[in-house]
Structures are given as structure tokens and as C-alpha cells.
Picture 1: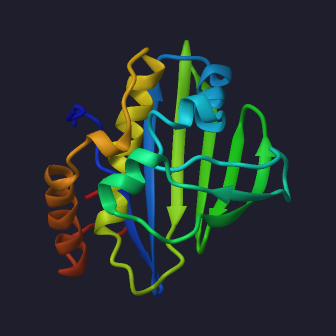
Picture 2 (picture 1 turned 90 degrees about the horizontal axis):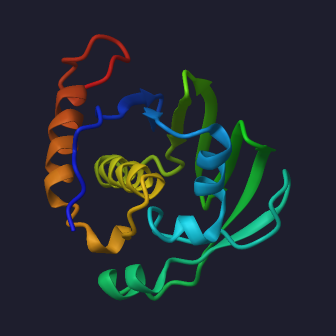
Length: 184
């Protein structure tokens, strides 16, 4: 399965020795429906490579096991990563850590739908962000598809084409060819 790539690229920023990635998506669904899709396991399975196990509240520790299809595709053997829900403000803000990364989903009504702003800060300064940026782009495309009623999983998508797009974007950033923190 190959999702469409009509959404704009995420905004790639270098913040000291860390990368941050920011994506904005306009979705045709209410904040409540989008909230359910980004927080409930039965929806996460269709667009995120891992589940989120644990209580849904600020300060809750969570376990982040990869879905079986992802484990099989990539031959993963490590135990599930741990995280913490930092902000739980339904249906507006969901912020959590995934090991050393921080992920923040912000939902705001926009017309008859929702503006989703997703930002992640990569905690490992040795990661250049290409795989992460392309991976989240794919995840958000799958989220949109899920909201439209489709089923799928990140394991069913070939990440190579989107990775190539983000590799070029990161090379542009490294060469100093961007205008500040504008999307590339």
C-alpha cells in the first residue's frame, strides 16, 4: 500500500543540536473525531507504528509496543519503549514522550473541520531526522485515510519514496538554502 503524498512536507528545523519537525494538516472532521483517532488503540493501529498502553491522563507513564506487523517487517527485538503523557487536554492537546522524543498534537476547529498541528522534537542529537520526518509524514497520511474510513498500517507502506523526498529537504537545510525556519 502506498498512501498519497499530496500533503505538504513537514517543517524541518534545527534547534541547537536537535531537530524538530512540524506538520500542519487540515482535516474534514471534528476535533472530537480526530482526538479519538490520535488517542484510541483501535485507531492508532491504522496509522501509528505503536500502541499507547496505559492510563490517559497528564503524568501517566505509558508503554509503547510496536504493532506485530511492524515488529515482523523490521525484525524488532527490543522491548517496548516507555513514555509519559505530558499534556492531556481533550480534544485540544495531546503531548507525550516516546523514549527521548517529544510529540505534541494540537487540535483546533477550522471551519467544519480541524487544524491538526503535530510537532516532534527529536531527543537524540545523533539522529539526522530523515527517517523520522518521512515516517511521520506517512503516519499523518494514514491518519487522514483512517478518518476517511480506510484501514491500513505503517507496516504496509514502502517508506523509500517519502524518505527520498525528505532526504533532499534535509540536504537543502544542511546547505543553508532555506529561509530561516520556512518549510522545505
